[in-house]
Amino acid sequence: MLKEFFKSKKNIVMSSVLAVLLIALVVCSIVVDAGETRPCTARSKWDTKVGCDAYACPYCQKATTKTAAVDCCEDCDGEKTVIVCTDPACVEKYNSDHAEEIENGDMEAATSVEAFQCEECGGTGEFENSSRYFGTFMSLAAPIIAIALALITKEVYSSLFIGIVIGALLNAGYNIPKTLDTIINDGLIASVSGTAGIFIFLVILGAMVVLVNKAGGSKAFGRWAQKNIKTKVGATIATFVLGVLIFIDDYFNCLTVGSVMRPVTDSHGISRGKLSYIIDATAAPVCMIAPISSWAAAVSSYAPEGTSGLKMFVTAIPFNFYSILTLVFVVAIAVMGFDYGKMAGVEFKAQTTGDLGAIEAEDEHDGASENGRVLDLVLPIVVLIVACVIALVYNGGFFDSSSEYYLDFIGSFGNTDATVGLPWGSLIALLFTIVYLMCRKAITFKEAMESIPKGFIAMVPAILILTFATSLKNMTGLLGSDVFVDNLLSGAEGLKAFLPAIIFIVACIISFSTGTSWGTFGILIPIVLAIFPAGTILGTVGMSACLAGAVCGDHCSPISDTTIMASAGAQCNHVEHVETQLPYAITVAGVSFVSFILAGVFTLIADWVAYLAIPVAIALLIGTLFVIKYLAKKTKQL
Image (cartoon, rainbow, N blue to C red; front, side):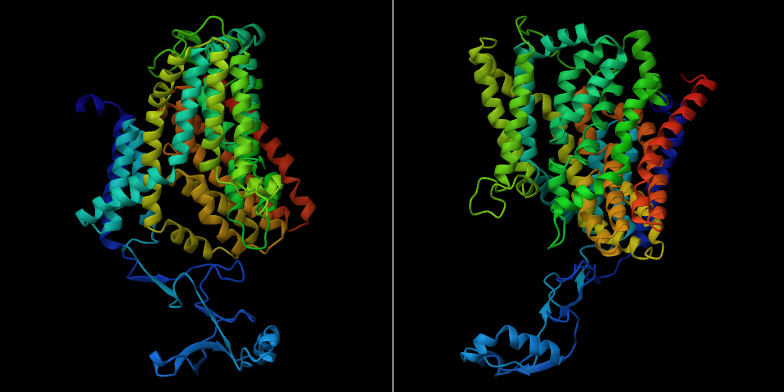
């Protein structure tokens, strides 16, 4: 078996790369040492500066080390030393704010103002490192090895688990009992508890898919589509349009579009690799430029106090080059009628042999009713969308008269929790679907109940991979990947105009390595807000670069939840999906990188000039595709 494996030059090269990575890991684990403590990098209470004030006056917002003895209590012998500010202006302001209490004799006029203490470090100005590798590049070692293993072995489960074990070993300092405790408690249990709502949503969605298929709804839609969608280009564009329309949530998008469009794309000989790419390209990228989505809510939650999170998200949309260009790319590839890279190979195979590259799965349409209607598919989806939107705003306080977001649709959507709202809405849609299909006599009660465990079984692979991927993300968090990135960017402030492009690359690397775009912009948004002046066009471009990079890395990563969901939705081999879409994603990422450089430079001229980078980016992408098509024809890769 090993002889067969090493006959391939590709396997030899990839195995050599993995061996180098493992040797580097061993060497670095010996050499690298972050020390016992690190400086506190908590955000200041009063501004967006990253860095701990330890103690600071609430009026002048300056750190102070002056001390004064004040009356306290009998337990400390009547005296307690506290850190105070004695600036006369601050003292006067303090006494003015408490003039009524002083006049009533409830308190005495102050001669100094007690400073606030940093809530993160308790005023010490430093944290104790949980590991000798905390905040070093070793914090990204585990996901890098997991990704390399997945690409070499074509096996995701073991690769992710090995990554989890390596991360736990590094965090525990190679202490075996502590390593096991980290894997179980900080990894797997935390992963399941943190994403339980998403798991429920996936199971319900799986059950709905089985119900609709059993009733013949998907089969009826397939018949309708085959009559009305005549060409391969039409099938591709129809899949793209449906993906854009389902912008509420990326998980919902992946599974719904895949289930609905598989029969259509199959009938036109579109490979499952191509279908999974279109699904993935219209999931996270669309959600990231849709103000009413779970992603908008997540980004808004990271806004500093006094700043509208939704406004911050909306202003960043025009410069989110990766998301916008990905959508342009899908349409351009369909209209131009060509593919390249590994996608060209799977498409050629699908067209010539009929092998679409589908994974072995039970035929969803076995036993499906022949009396199904298109409405049996469309109505449950519409109810699901409406119910999920209502559930999301309900969870955000839209109907709560005591909430500050009462009857505020945008505000409540920004205040919602998708892990609660999506299961809430999907449960309503599931109950409606069961009742509707039973009233139509499309299914029996027994068949409806049998569909629920079948839907769960269909989602088990995705849930397992999602659990492992989230656990791996937790390992990088324990090792301080956010601190490492903060230190990495702190020395680049002198290159202001080029910072958006740098931030884009950094976000891509983090998101690719950790498999989470939400975690990535959670790390980078506070840093971006600290680097750029508030309210500037360069700050907007920088924020867009952060979000675009997070989506890009997520789109490329084999351990990303969205990538996993796209594979599940298309019923495509997961590693094949990653390998076929990677050249496409890298092409868009390259053009996006250049576009962020242009946008950053354009901001130096005038604010309005920066917006010219948008049409330039689109033109640059289309021009790049024409060059690739020409080169592909020249080298006979088409």
